[in-house]
Image 1 (cartoon, rainbow, N blue to C red):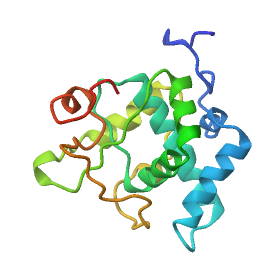
Image 2 (image 1 turned 120 degrees about the vertical axis):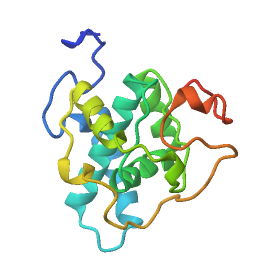
Image 3 (image 1 turned 180 degrees about the vertical axis):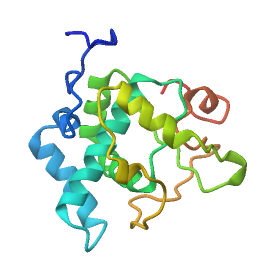
Image 4 (image 1 turned 90 degrees about the vertical axis):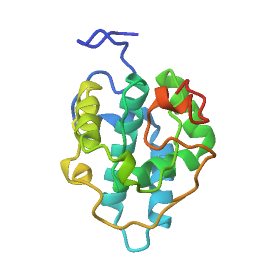
Amino acid sequence: MAACSNGRPSIPPPCSTGPHSARALLSRDAFTGVMLTVLDNNPGMDAPLAERIVTEALKFVHAAALFPTVRVSPTKEVDEGWHALILHTHLYATLCSRLGRTVHHYPERPDAAHHDPDVLTRTMALIEQAGHTPDAELWAGRQKELVGVARHTPMPGGCGPINPGNCATHGGSGDD
């Protein structure tokens, strides 16, 4: 594999920063299937928004795989795309395998005790370090209400946003 300027192996997308480079992580048919899952779970949503949501979810998963020890979290909108990816279990497992690690999801209900005011800024910075440009509108925060694909499905001792170090002490595998 070729290396990016940051010395990391290039995993598609190959070090590009174009707004659609993350789409190269999935075939056209796979991307469309995930996008249709987002549309099915959000009546009235238009296809261009669903495409953007899935693209941002791919950027998020790519960054989380590259930086597994850093606590990251998607916005509610991006989480919708991540949930849709996860529902396509074989596709998601294959994607994570290609990225070099499984990016596990540990759902967390809103809790002021776990509030991390910098998590979205940090997540966006890691997405940029992974070679992508975050869609600022979809990373603006948890504002819009989308129908949840799998909301509030707590895992025993779940640890919330990606934080592999803490997951090991809260029932997660710790090898995210």
